[in-house]
Image (cartoon, rainbow, N blue to C red):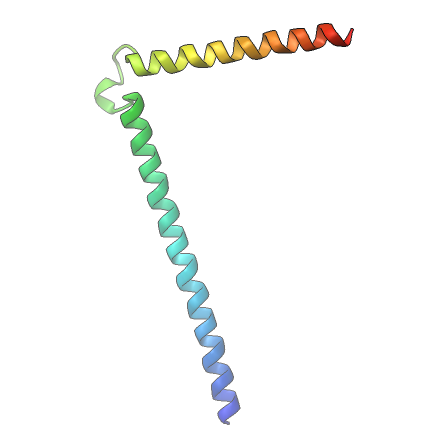
Length: 85
């Protein structure tokens, strides 16, 4: 009888530990997602107040950087393709 209660207590404790761990992990993940989303909105001024306005200077800089990066990648691929021929 003592062995049965010990095993039952051990299994119950393990189940409780796994449940609490998954609950905390989910809560941490949701908090991190909210924080990243909030930081992104603050960094690139994507709040509802500026939804109908022109792009801010930070967003224009980001777009310019992405376009430049794409252009450099395409030029690099063109050079690589030329070398293969």
